[in-house]
Structures are given as C-alpha cells and as structure tokens.
Amino acid sequence: MQNILEGLNDKQYEAVINTEGPSLVIAGAGSGKTKVLTHKISYLINEKNVKPWNILAITFTNKAANEMKQRIENLVGGQATNDMWIGTFHSICVRILRKFIDRIGFDSSFIIFDASDQKSLVKQCLKELNIDDKIFTDRGVLSEISNAKNEMLTPVQYAVKANGEYRKETIAKVYSLYQS
Image (cartoon, rainbow, N blue to C red; front, side, top):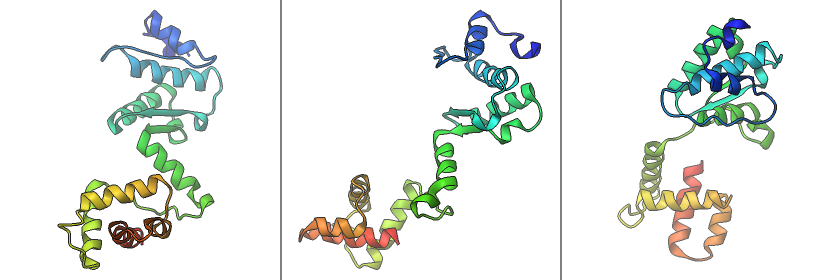
C-alpha cells in the first residue's frame, strides 16, 4: 500500500484518497493526471476492495488507455486490468454493444464502418441501382440516411415518410440496399 501513495504531491494525494462521491481533476499537460487516475484505481482495488470489473476508465486515445493499463498492472500486479473496462469512448461502447446487443435482436458480430467505408458502400448502391451519382451524391445520400437513422427510421419507414417525393423515394431505395 505504501508504494501506491508514494511519490504523490499533496494535491495528487488528496485526489487519490478522495473516494466518497465524484472528484474532478483539472490540470495542465504533464502535471500528473494519468498518475492520479492510475494510483486512484490502484487505491480503490487495494484499499477499498473494489473489484476490477467494477472499474470503468475512459480516455481519448488508445495510447492513453494502453499507458493506463500498463501503469495499473505495475501498481496492482497480476492481470487485474483484464477485468477492468479501460479504453476510449468508442472502444468501450463497442465492447458494451458486443456484450449486450443480442438483447435488442442484433448479432454481436457487427462491423463498424468508417466514413470511407460508408462512402464506398453508398457509391456501390448508387451504381447497382442505376442512380445518377451526379444528381445523388454519396455525401448527400449519406447525410439523408444519417438523418433517417437519427430519427430511428428503418428504410421502410423512411420510404413511407417520403410520401411520393421523388428524391426521398430514391434515397429510400439506396437506404434499403445500404442496410442489407
């Protein structure tokens, strides 16, 4: 236990041992924020008997997540980080989806497309449906599909909502092929 709190300055020490309720750490680059987080996680495990699988640590980059995992392993020892939820916003959300998506009727072997993949797929759909890509650009179609998804509309619901409007009916055909 001594080594977990060793080497912390007064403010870092205060942030690490404050375990009742939320705590906010605001500090500049290179000031030891990651050190505070990793020591706090180690403190929670060793002193407060928090189980590793009850810990969620979200960072902005994979590099930062890997750095946190390594530091925690060095402090706690063993493979405790294997049970922890440490990662980026995106990786944690994907992990949650893969674990629980079957509960809403989807398969956990889904693939996440990046922007380039999406554009390629829309171009392929336009070509397959013989739709002029000068009139219906991949960007415009993707924007409309994104709007439909934000409204939680399936391709069929989007087609019904198009209500005879040529542009939207055409995009509905692309959306339907895009989803399949």
